[in-house]
Length: 450
Length: 142
Image (cartoon, rainbow over all chains, first blue to last red; front, side, top):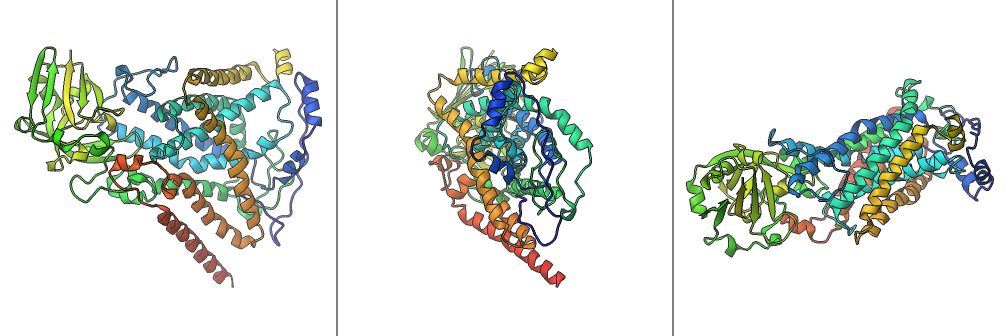
């Protein structure tokens, strides 16, 4: 970024006074020896930093933006795990030891709740990439500073920074690959993203606690938000060594750098929100969920095809039966029998953990009416099983509130036509605010518990 | 307390925080140690930081410095569209390069669509707009 050979105009390069050497903590002899034995190259690198805009102010502005936004990504990620229903052992990873957030039954209202939380998690995660990269750019000279530490405190802090930087990059990369269906990493996404999040969160809390006073001081000091490139000059040397020792002339103002990061974020937002807003779907030009299957009423995006699930036409044809059970009562219905029951229509979103969502108008039988058929007026839970035999989501458990919600359906039709095979024909579950993978398709059995 | 500060190099709460943070990471490492893919997870975690710091950053810094030979007024007109194009490539890389192993088709019921053309078109658009703005500025100045 801003580096340059001397241009004809603009301010002349300024030599910033060398920083005062901080004292060495124990064991002082070790740190002093380290400082004295400078590996080849470190002085070259130290003098090579040119950008005059690096400094506490720019780093603090970027830090403040991330401090305001990253907690949202972290919290929505945790909410996603809770929405999966850890009480029924169906949140991944299953066994999380003592890093167990407080668990509650995921509500069914507002119906767009999961659409919002998961859409925010994925979209914000993507949108923040340029801000994270700019923040890393603003502090990168510290990585090459010599000596790497002058105290045990600095050694520990640098280790925590490796966890911070490794953490945010790991979370971004695994998340980006997951939402784009490129499982190049070869490990379980849920496990890695979950534990990566905890490492990153711990490192973020540590970093914020240590650096917050610095950030506040820098933001309270003279600002540079209005300084044009012609008057852009380096800040005075700072104790963290962010300001270049031999800065070049400015080729971009600080507000220019911020506009670049912010503009990048807006560009990514414009190319990502289409995954979550039906009317804008085609604008997600470079993402997998910019496409409809076709223009018909069942052409909205599919999460798992009948072929991939191994659900064949002979099992969903006239021979298909739905079995309802509660205690020792069992009722079996065919599709005509279901269509003869009172039908209810609701417009509800299907929202995927990968961040995309779509709102459609579903028609079918209320789950609570099905429960009543087998004498379970107020069930505590319902275990739904699909014709699909394998796969992580061939069955799902719903809690009582999800069964009895007036819009919780066993949908038979969508947008006025029969479900298509890929959308779960002959029958699928649709419940307000329920994660998409638990809206089980090709349902063959529902067991209502107590 | 002052002794600790002098010996350690920071206040006691600093020690508490950093040790706490490393303890969380250590606990996670212990939990994952039994996973058959633990080595790969560690490789991607450390690799992400190494690739950013020692490959991505030097690459764009060198490219930017090479731009320094262009005139100052032209420079940002190359820099900004190149940045936008590179950012999209980086973020949407799996789609642009068509990576993946059939998961896409199984999930969506659609054949993967090559997005390289779209990315090239967007990039061309960025450079074209920037070139137009540059030309307009030059015209206004002369």
